[in-house]
Every structure is written in C-alpha cells, then in structure tokens.
Picture 1 (spheres, helix red, strand yellow):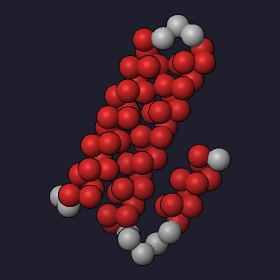
Picture 2 (cartoon, rainbow, N blue to C red):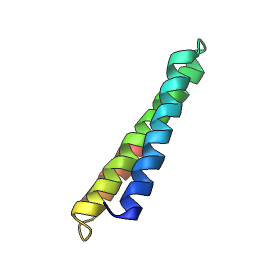
Picture 3 (cartoon, one colour):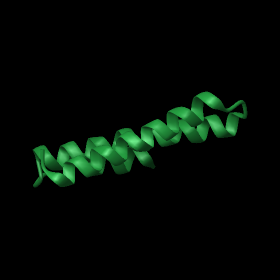
Picture 4 (spheres, rainbow, N blue to C red):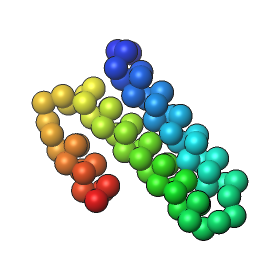
Length: 70
C-alpha cells in the first residue's frame, strides 16, 4: 500500500473513532450531531483516498464528495 493512501486511511480511521466516541458518549443532541458529522467526514475522506488510488485521473469522486458535504 502506498504511503499516501495509508496516511489518508489512518486519518480517516482516527476521525471515525473520534466521531463514534462523540456520538455515543454525549447526551446533548448538538454534540451527537457533531459526532455524526465527523463520522461522515471520515467516510468521505476514505472515499476520496480510494478513488484517487484507483482512478487518479477521474474527478467524479471528488465532485461526489463536494455535493455530499454541501
């Protein structure tokens, strides 16, 4: 596995872990929603990392992430 992909997947896993902890440990609805947003950001980061690894010349994956984040 190339180092850039490994770094992106590691950051995505860390973001997912922080978001999961934040969503499950809080009782405030706003904090739970923030945790869910972190989980979504981690999933989208992993999507972009794999898309760039598999199809580096196609920009459709990046556009999909922009649409989902907006």
